[in-house]
Amino acid sequence: MANVSGSANPTATMQLPIVRITRDPLDGAYIRSLEQAIINTGVGGIVTFEGVVRDNARGKRVRALEYDAYPEMAEQELARISAEVERRWQTNAIALVHRIGRLELGECSVVVIVACPHRAEAFEACRYAIDTLKTSVPIWKKEIGENGEEWVEG
Amino acid sequence: MRIHIRYFAALREITGQAEDILDLSEGAKVSDAALALARRWPALKAPLAACVSAVNRAYVTSDTPLRDGDELVFIPPLGGG
Image (cartoon, rainbow over all chains, first blue to last red):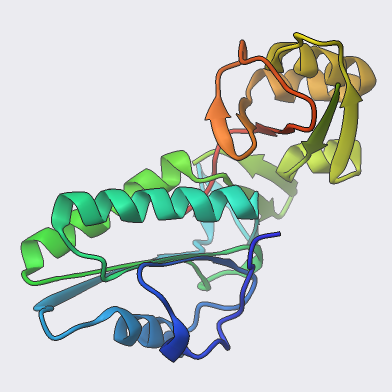
């Protein structure tokens, strides 16, 4: 089994890049610890993207989301994305973390952090990483609404 | 040969189980495994048609030959992010 690890892990032991599927909340303190774990003295900008559970989708009310993943392959695909970011933008200061399980409205489902010497490549690389994550990493989402539940794409 | 199946998301809910075993004849492909599973679980037939597949954690096409001991996962449309 993959290391479906927890946010309680001390960041001091994190190896770069950080790729992880976890059941634990992605709260502000954890996200800050990821930023601090990847930063180095050559960094001039950090871009952090947080995906958050929204109360509607395709015109329907959403009460919560449930995420599932093929954890071993998902972490492998996250590592593939970070390797491509490293190749194209020359940085290994990357964290890609996706939460699975049931998430309530407003909770963070995914965190993508990229740090680079300058902001332009940090924005570009972060955008590339989240866009690619959505199309290549085996993670699934079930919308829990007022009239039932449904596994949905996108 | 023996193929190890793992179910996730909708496929796990439909089958009510996380794993399955398929015994297939030599030379069987991913598409043969999908047909065998649809026979075992008729409710899987439609969802399987919308899936891509992964063998041993790598995306493959449906004409990929299987080998004894492979882990095969059918991957429904993705929803990460």
